[in-house]
Image: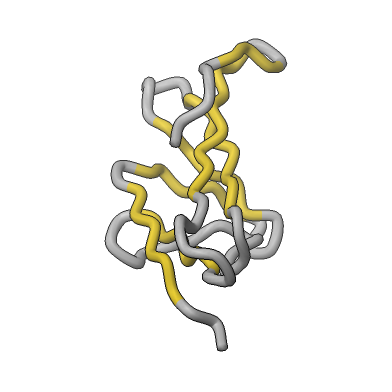
Length: 82
C-alpha cells in the first residue's frame, strides 16, 4: 500500500508498506523483480521510503549498500517463516 505523497526537504517522498494478511506470516519485499530490496525486510509489516529524483523517478536509498536505486516495480510476498 502506498502512503500519501509528501514533501520532505524539497523532494517528494512516499512510504510503501506491505502487510501479511495471514497471522504469523512475514513479508518479503523486492524491487524490480529481485534486483534490490529494502534494508529492513522479512518481517511484518515491511515499509520502504522512496524519494522522487530530479528525473521524476522514484528512488530507494540503501543505508547498507550506501547507494540509491531507481525503482520501477515493487513486489511483496507473504511467507511462513516457521
